[in-house]
Length: 171
Length: 380
Image (cartoon, rainbow over all chains, first blue to last red; front, side):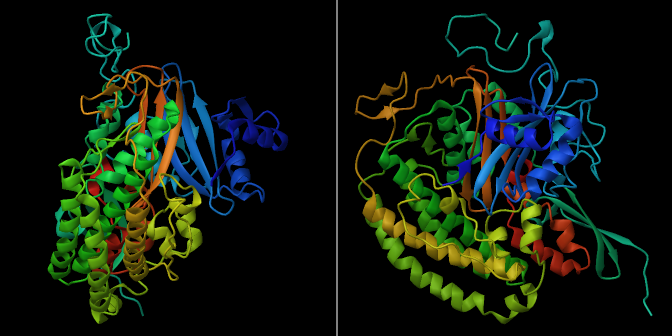
């Protein structure tokens, strides 16, 4: 059975090695200071007790006021998983450092997050759009992409037939 | 003395039989050698992750058929497992066994297609594919028996499966598992020692274990590089902890090993299916969740209106192509706040440039064939 290293556990370990690098910790994930992401990730990959050599998944989430990049890490040797996150509050030009130097497996996944969510990964060797064409206006996975009139956002507010507002969408 | 020619650009695809769908490879050549390879994708991008944010959790199950349309069962399974994790649902035992059975049938069907088409890429035009389709057809018949569909199955439900298998399913499955090893032996004779396949794929597209891990490669491709990593063993889901099987591992990490690992996995799938047919218990096939309704014939069906609590969940399974994961963020509403698919086809393409630079165009076709991509899952 794969052991889960909770966000609190991993935050504790990172905090001992790099004081101040962990911004917040919850059972799901530890939030790492974007400025110290590379040194933290290198430590997670190389430390003998952690050995997170496999970047399982990299994705971005639009949390309305900020963007979050989520890294699911796996240690194949120790059969463990953990989750770390990096946040960026600049909605006009969100940027986080690229983890391609640590895990080359991020090469296409960061391009995907750039293409669909508009996060600039600083230091990525080949940051281009991947599914959409160059010149496509906007980043479709953002919650404010093609907003409906009246500030309505995509998403379901209620099930059909449930009492509530006439218009659907997160207001 | 080395001679250089002017760089020449060749487009492989988007409409080309060896790109396995609408996928384009832009190769820059120096003479016959590839000096640069660029992947152009997105021809099949349907924006599923955005669409899913406007549909309920139950309405999203059919989308997961249409990402990896060669292995719809495993797509369904990974998604419902993520929602079950979010809602902390206990799935009944029989449903877990049905899920195990269906994902192994699906693995066999998907691998038989991969193996046949790989032989196609090596130059055995269509004959192996037709042989493989003969067996795949029998498996699709079983799927049709269980859920009425053959390709986009929509069989798994949040909390179980859509319906129980009919009484004639297990006898037919037993006949199939008795028949398949003979067929598989025939294919091994024809293909594994085939002089042309060996000549075309031995030592082509070599990926070392360290490269495979650092490039996030998973599934048969990772195992062909000698890493015995299978999520069915490492982090058992469904009923995989109760069945006995071996992890097929390669040694050289070349295109031939990927092909051989797939054939070895087909044998293991038969082993799992034989055990599952004997061990499957009786009982309900669907958990009763919240407002689950019970049909007049006594079957509990998934409630249409699910509101998982706010939070996030990541569930992963071993799909025929590798680690298939779903990352779902819920804000407590009726639709996912974020729905992300960690698709093995897409991520397994990461080292493609590494493998193709320096080889010839003919080898690049074999390498792409050995990755076994499904473009629906690459582009989503």
